[in-house]
Image (cartoon, rainbow, N blue to C red; front, side):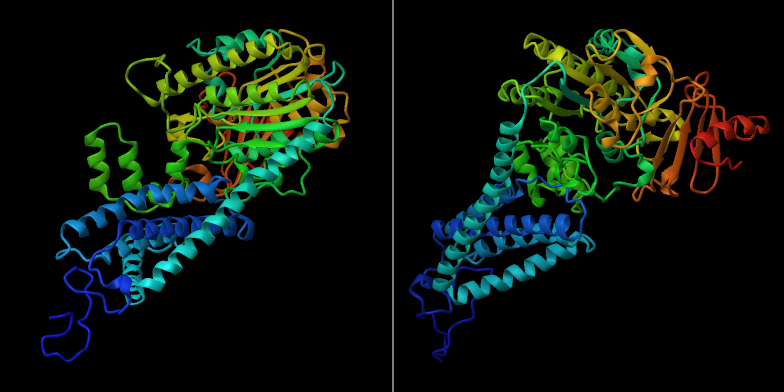
Length: 620
């Protein structure tokens, strides 16, 4: 037959994607085989993984720096994404190549081109074109891959050479980008360390610890029935405990922005997809001008990462993990719910449920390797030791109490065996308390603790069915904004003092500058010094919280209707909804806020008085 048609017309027989029984249409020597070499299959797979990784990295750059939105990706996407794609594409390609060798008459070698190409295209389109149904993107990816396979077959020798060049170029480009992403910050940190001043009693170090999603109501330190914070209780005896600290918002990013700048959240510094502007002055920038080297260590990969703008002024920002797990999760193929559900399931029934659901649509927030308090604490302690007595400002975010509620690795469940979310939440608080005890003991042993101002707060609370709500960011009830606040500053604040007046977290930056002997006016907000000096009365104190409309909240959640405002004074908590509805609670006697006094006309004068002090008007 000699590869010609039976009539001997001399025309090549049409090639087939589905069978390996015919020879290629080209006269290239490389195409005279009906199968494909393993080395060639590997080259195609590697090129596809590099192409997909480069595409994903490009999407991240475009989304963050052009669209000014969040990508939820690690800065190391340039090298992690290709490795993750390779972890999926290489095995699939080798399996296809093996099938070709076993059954060359049934499986065409072109399938070895189609599979990696389709996987790479699908991975890129999943990220970049989320408005189109994933099944349509999958069909489009397969169609394009089949077309490219036929083009590859028609020019196989040149296609192999071009694939090699493309792979080498992409690898070089991604390597250079990865070196720049890691190398430039290291150089900046080295310069900051060199310019930092030594520790001194006059201007001590500053350590800001944020217990993400921890509400004061669930801490033994603040009267909870479970003794889950013994280490923090011991710590509180060495400083000031604020029992009515109010977060400026009920979700992470605006509260962190306020803690870093002193600006009230009503200024709308940040948003659900809006980062902190680099024109805003942060505490890290101010302290940097006064000889401090700074570093942030955060476990919150939702709203405290590099792309949120919170890192400005810090010489080091440690957010996403650098681990095998993080590499696996980086690519879009790993984030597909059917794949992620299979990988995360603890047993085969769970894996089967994930496969059966066959969900392809990516979630808004990507999965990342969750970093427990022990890891974050270790990173901070290693860094603190490495700066060799330089004056430092450090920020530490512990994320263990955030949903999804999971027991930290190696931690024995402390409360109950039911596995309920609330039990796990309380147990996670106990775990963070244990790790903070270890952190404080280490600093004490290093003789650093008594030369350091330490602030322990939370960014917001949590809801477990109160008012029919769960999680946070969707309301301004006290369970979401009443947070712990401890301040230890040897020689700066009295030990064992309790302040019961409501205080805003936006006062933290000015308070730090005041304690350091610097001008608090370098940042907005008022110092809390009057609170521990006894001149801040409960009648004059108030705290304001604000939240913008939640764009993707559950139907019926208050914040889905529009922005909300909340004001807390010494006795009452007032909430204004976007639709004009008001709520009023006597929160001291009614901690669960079950009785709404807003309809009681006798309360109008009381509420109007403290609203006027907050610069607002009473609207019954």
